[in-house]
Length: 433
Ligand code: PMP
Image 1 (tube, rainbow, N blue to C red):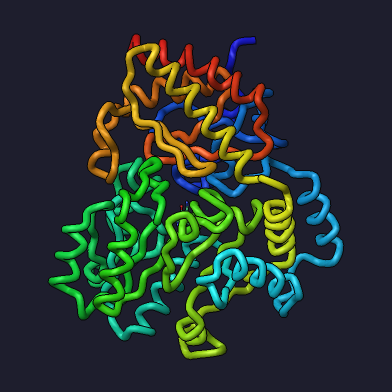
Image 2: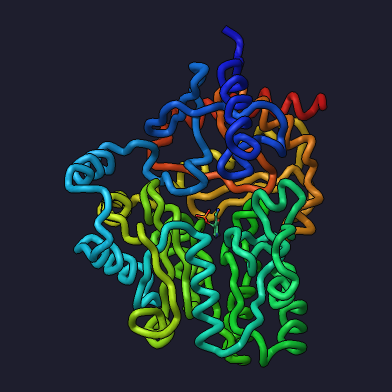
């Protein structure tokens, strides 16, 4: 039967009666690309299945966490085991120490780690801490980077905020937004000017060291070094938001790949194995200011939740113990990108293909993309045409030009070939559009 989303359309209409826009996170609504979002019934390995009976090769991976693929048998069995011991205690467990220990080993810049429930909480808490530590109020963020939806960082934000054209949300008090200085990604001069004007007031610079929320944008050679140097010069902290790129661009994250030591790091996604976990951590002298070790308050009823810690631990153990895990998944990612590029070029499209480890992205743009302004020059209509043509052929990509794609260890050679074959038809449609 021809591809259809009839049941999903009914479910979406019903969801809209009870949930704003029918979804619990905006990009899921497909508002950017139009049409009906498939309502998902289940997922396994590289595939997700909707309630209409369609199956898709999934390159969203829950927006990054599912690096092992969906419902990995070991992760599932450990969660099943854990759930029989109770779902939440609100008291310390061995699991939290073990996951923190693993993370500090992988990312030596993180001497102490505090677990929270979402990336938003991680960056919010890291900023509070940076402000307390430096006794300064201003922060610098980069246009098109997304760090979650709290007030200080919902300023010129990427991801859904960019897709829907609301990078600055109503409801953020001007007094708070006024403490956030925004600078173009990869722009050395702009950063230097921000420090020249406000240097003594800047508590921290927060950056996605590999940016995945305006599409996938890589730091220019030497840029992160410059960011590190200028923060040191002015006594501001450097916060790496590796919620998305941590355990994705490499096991040790972007800080390992680019050999930069940030003062604080935010993690999320992969470290929770698909359950709600995020973390912030960093220099001991800074992290010891967090309550109850120090005065900077931050807490959470479900923080360090035993099911979530179990899923994270199971995931990181597999990443750590599978020989050549990253080499293999990265090689598959590279092969897919090469195949897609070849198909695009066959139709005369000179699009930008970016890859960072197991993350990748295509800009429907024939000029280099290195910041939000250059990303915005992409042909959104061409992207949307491609997106729907892929979806109809059973390939699930993020429903926005301003999002990255994610490979998993469960993607097979057959998946890659099927995706490339589907892209041939999808690029043909783009050529007609
Ligand atoms: N930081 C980055 C780099 C992210 O990509 C995201 C979410 N995509 C967040 C923070 C916010 O995380 P969460 O959605 O878990 O609040």
